[in-house]
Every structure is written in C-alpha cells, then in structure tokens.
Amino acid sequence: MTVRACGRQSIHAIIPRGPVASQRDGIFTLQNAKPNKILLVRFSALGDVIQTLPILSMLREGFPDAKIGWAIDAELAPAIEDHPALDYLHRCSRRSWSSALRNPTKWGRVNDEFRAFVEDVRTVGYDVAVDAQGLFKTALLPCLAGIKRRIGYRHGREFSSLFYNERYLYRDEYFDPAISHLKHMADLARSIGAGEVRYAIEPPRVTDAARQHVSELLNGAFASDAPVVVMAPATQWLSKQWPEEHWTSLLEQLLTETDLNLIVQGSAADAAMGARILRGLPNGKLHGQLVNLFGKLPIPAMYALYERTHVAVGSDSAPLHIAGAMRVPVLIGVYGPTGYRRTPPIGSPHIKLFSTEGELPCQPCHKRTCPLGTTECMMRIGPKQVFQAVLEGLREAGIPFSYHGNGAPAERLVSLQ
Image (cartoon, rainbow, N blue to C red; front, side, top):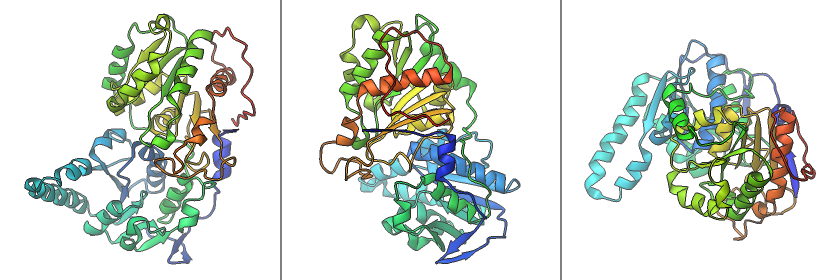
C-alpha cells in the first residue's frame, strides 16, 4: 500500500504553465476576442462544483470587466452563492424535474419550468459558454439558450460534443489518472483567453448566519479547547466508502490516545451510517470529546465548520474539497476508485493522500460501484496508518495537542509543503 502526499508544489508539477492557446478541431489558434458575458456550466456534484471554483476565479481575473454566470443544480446553489466573482446564478431544478416526469400530470409544469430556466440564461445574452462538466444535459443548455460560442470536451460522453463548436481534449487524456481535472477545466477557460491556472480555491463568503448555526451546534459540546478533527465517512459512490469498521477504529484510537475533539458529519440520508460507526465506541468518550453532526449541516454551515477545523479526514468527496477550500491546516484523503493525482483537494498547507494506485491493476477504475465487488482499494488502507497521519500532520503544522500512545510515524508517508 502506498501513501501519497499532495501539496501546492505537487499541484504545480501536475499543471504546466504556457501561452494562452486553444485547439479547435485539431488546429491550435490564439484567442484574442474578449467576451463580455461568460457562462460557466457545472450542474453537479458538490465536490466537483468546489473543484470548479478555481476556474471561476481564472475567468474573473482574465476578464475583470465581464459579466460571469454559473448554471448549477438548485440544491447546490448555496455552494457558490455570494461568491465575489459571480454576477449571475442560474438554478436548474433537475432533480425535482426527474421525479416529476414519472407523473404525466406534472409534465406541463416541468416543461414550463425548464423553458423558464433556459430563458433565464438566454436573457443575459452570453457571448460564450464553458461547459466544465461535459454531459448531455450540460452541453444542451448553451445550445438551447442561443449562445453562439460553446466550448467543451471532445471525449463525447453522452454525445455532449455534438453541441459544442469548440472541442478540446480527447477521451484518453481526459481520463488519464496522472492529469489533474483542474487542468482539463483550465484548458477550456484558457481557450477564451483566461490567464494562469489557479492553485487555490476562493470560496464564497461565509455568512454570519452559517457561523451562528455552527456555534450553536458546538456550544458546550467539548470539555476542552483541544484541536478539532472533522471526519466525513459517507460518499455518494459506494466504491469510495472507506469501511465503516475502519472509521470506528480510527475514532476509537483518537479518543483513547489523544485529547483531540472529534466531529463526524454527513447528510441526513447517511445518518444511519453515522450511527453504526459510533455504535462501537466506548460510551464514556462520546460526551465531551465527540459530536455527531450528521444531517445538521446545510452547505453554508459546512464552510463555517471547516473554517474552525484543524484536521479534516475523508475520501474523495465534497467535504474533503470544502475543507481544502477553507484551508484547513491538515487534510487527509483516502483514495480508491478515483486517482489521487486527477482529483486531489487543493488549498490546505498540509495535504496527505492515501492511495493504493499502482498496486491493483483495476485502479483507478472511476466506477461508482466496485466492478469486482471487493472495494479492495479502500480496504487496504488501514485505520492505524490514517491515525498516524493525523498525528504527523498536526506536528508538521505546529498545532499542539496531547498524545499518550506509542506514536510511530505513518509508513512511507511523504509530505510536500
């Protein structure tokens, strides 16, 4: 099993710098025309939305006088609301529409709402659309909205490339596990004249209401003012889930061998998982040192929580990327079916990524469920190794904490600052 590390310098190594150029149907050309209105398209998912934020900043820096909009799923809009680089926000009620389409009596309403969504985009009068997601649904929107310059990927997923008039990156390059997806999106932005790749995420403004919500949840929850470790066990992909027993073991070791304050968090839909993970812990430690926030954190509150967090632990999922955006001092990721070089978190000064990439011929497979039914790539990463990485990360960051164990450093762990 190999432990990887990823910091700002490693991201620099992944993403080369160069002149602003684009490739249209195999021909490289320099783009000189400056658009006045730019639409960025990324409907979902939350982690991918967070990873797209550097592209928004690139566009704003490249075109300070332009109007910039973002088309996004309505339930994820809070992830980018009040962002200083954003002028327009177009909400797509895709999830509710999909549900309503099962009932013929609701088809008229869905049609009206969809037309209104497209018209909302059309009314702005965008010069160019950059589709950072590359699916049928995201490629179709700029076409229906009458945007003349439509930029996307050549890979042809879900026939999306049929709707673009500028296409970049073939399938093999797009899915290359050694190439950061941030570079893919940056290539699209640079094709219209945006500047250098951003290596940090500028999050939206954290609201006072979100901070107050988190303060109320944590008021009196901890018996000491020790550093806070937040863990996010749940993921939308079954293949990305670290075994529940590993989470329980990690929590137990942190509870019994350190004074660290612990928080577990996830959506309400994953609350049953959270309960199972906590069930095996010693009852005496569940009060004063550990807080269960499953189902209690809307998206804005997640930003506020990670604003006051010292260590974040998770798999390749939204909480890990939000933690990076909020520059949590120590970030620890457990990677399996997705490549640690393709979708690393960015922003935090101390990032440690565990991966067995290169040890299993099937990895990274980029599949939502394990094709072999084993999730061996996640199973191989043990809780003791992640525990040791937490200790080492705190020490590297200069964050004091109390430890009463044997504390050997994590095997083969390399830190890039």
